[in-house]
Length: 432
Image 1 (cartoon, helix red, strand yellow):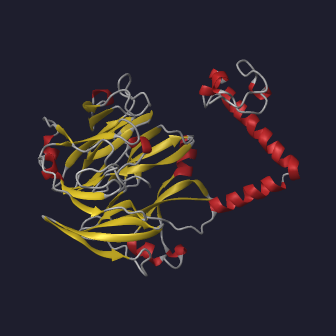
Image 2 (cartoon, rainbow, N blue to C red):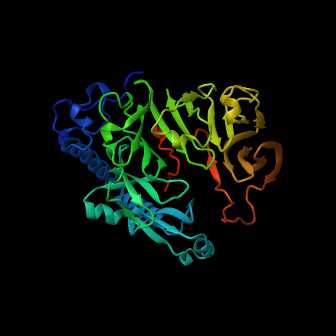
Image 3 (cartoon, helix red, strand yellow):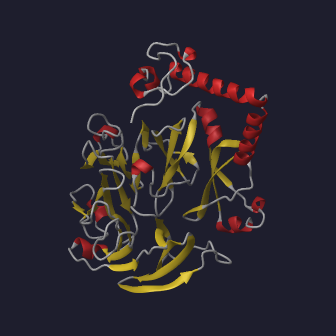
């Protein structure tokens, strides 16, 4: 398709302030625009913004623009919003922005205090963990919040992801959730890069980051999964998996659920096709296996099949018919049996012309599906108990009259499809 836009003047050597408004054809884009933080590129962007504002204000002396800005600011700064919490151990965490804190507050409260604010949000007492506005002022940085990776299941440490100006690349810093301070003595720290991180233990993490030639894919995301032990130099970290240069990204993570400890790796060829690997050692042995040898076994599913793992269960969400599970359906198998070559799959959801699968969540005894039925939400559940399976047993109303935040004996976990994909920043324990 030909380019319909052309600049009014040549842009290859023009002063940025003199360039006429318009879209720039890709074949004439000046090289200085590639430097997105360069003064020449920023000057060009400012000139375009100023011209846009001038044209808007010429219509009605600025009344429309000023009114729109005022309404947008009021919507962004209002306190009349639900503070969606995420449970991390004994606390409920929330990331909050308002007029007084435009960069945001990472804060936490107890379940009791959160419930006290159901009718009156002011009754909830929040403890500030990180004031990002104050941190940015103190450090002279344009920090933008990109999320956290908290150490499961203890939740005593977190890896904080901070971006300069909202860029994809982040700085990763270790944070102590007991003292609410950044770790100063021998911390895990990654300089600005498109990194992927995950906890193995308090003194050990998995990383993918820019360590020079061969460490990134052509897309600029991690190509390697490395094991980093505290005190070790970053360049000395051990490579435990490496993908191909034309992959989108490679990521690794560790499931620390007691009795089901496993290492996972995902190699994404694109956004819809990937290969998944799991450490072949029996559950519980992997934590002691680091420092010695271990192996990764490919998860034998089609590359376009979405998967997730919870304790002993493997969830299959194929895009095309597979193992008796229809495209768009959901099936469950026992992971260890699957790795041993068995293909006993129970289909727990079959789509129809009116119903589609959205996501699933686990409690101690049930897996709960979120379905769209003619665009209305339904929450059917299926019993899951150690060593046995049963057919779907009950349905939950889409809007229950009341809900409890009291945790089950074991943590509830939720997944949309694949466990984690670093290029979309879907990390375990992130989002706050």
